[in-house]
Amino acid sequence: MPDNTTTPTKKIAFLVAAEGIEQAELLEPWTAVTDAGHEAVLLSPEAGEVQLFEHLDKSETRPVDQVVASASVEDFAALVLPGGVANPDALRLDADAVAFVKEFLDSGRPVAAICHAPWTLIEADVVRGRTLTSWPSLQTDLRNAGADWVDEKVVVDGNLITSRNPDDIPAFNNALLEAVNHGVSSAQSVSEA
Image 1 (cartoon, rainbow, N blue to C red):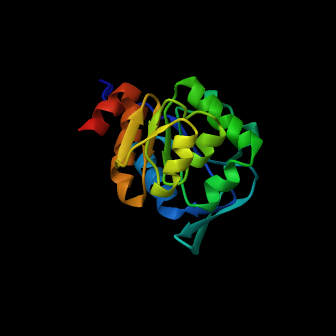
Image 2 (tube, rainbow, N blue to C red):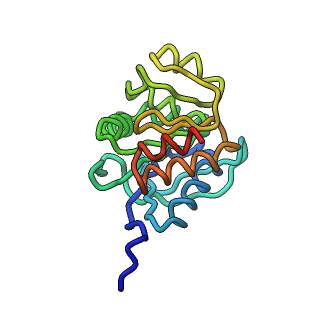
């Protein structure tokens, strides 16, 4: 008899720039997604490798799986936007990355952004009227873009999941996996617990 309790494998997109990616904010959610049986796919504006950082120090590199300009939102169940200061700052200057983020939010699928990643959300003009959290220095940027900024470890507003920093990754991962496995309304209840 087949086991019907397992969650079917889903593809999860991780969108990053060429460098400045905070290592923990990419690798820890990546591991949570793959440990849950899903397929993690690394998207970037350019082919090749991306440079991860541990705060301000270079760490490892990771190969890009797909260029964002050739990616389709329809192929993915969720989108993760890791932080790092330089990473989202570069992404918000890439028209294809910004369009992909906007289309993903508009699709209703979960989008999870941590730390400085909401800069890309601001550029995609998808934060107006939403409640988010982020690295504290982004609160004015988010408020100026029409968002309600709060200082909480994880915030779920519709299909948008946000967290402040690497310390919040366990809560971030729980909300992300809940949204992927059981829907965004389920993620909302987990974040309030």
